[in-house]
Figure (cartoon, rainbow, N blue to C red):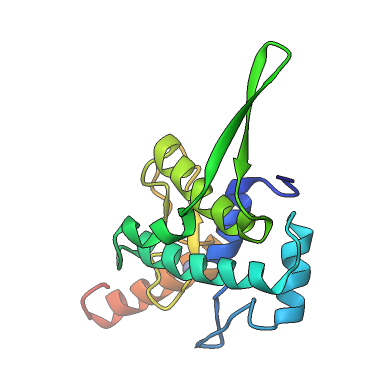
Amino acid sequence: MTDAVPDEEFLLAVLNSTPVVDGVQADDLADATRARAWLASVGGLGAEAELEHVLDVRQALQDVVRGDQPPAVLAPALRGVARIPALTGDQITWTLSVPRERELAVRAVLAWDALARQSPGRLRPCANDECRLFLIDHSKANTARWCSMAACGNRMKARRHYQRVRGAPAG
Ligand SMILES: [Zn+2]
């Protein structure tokens, strides 16, 4: 498996490919030609079937990270996947055995799992409920709430300030 970008970065890019633009949910992968070019650039084939697997897994992962679905919805993406050990010198290396067009989708699910084990609770939806993006919190205190301070943090702070000034309950 080629790793053109780190798994975590790839996972976040997949999760964040449905941003809200001017109040409307957009889909960065809706244009199949552009989407396939992107998949090729991150180590995939750029194939149509591959894109379909990635879109399926994106929906499942978004639902799971938002808490709308149990992780069991990811199981179909892993069906028939195996890891094959090989002895190289004095070390064992593991290779994923999966049809090539499913590799990227599987990679996203494995990245989600690795993150959940190594950094539990660090992957979460942006706290701005009008935002559809996700964040991976790398801060020591684990208190990041926004996909980015510039995009959502300042906007939400400004809104809360406005509500306080107006005497409305803070949201
Ligand atoms: Zn946000």
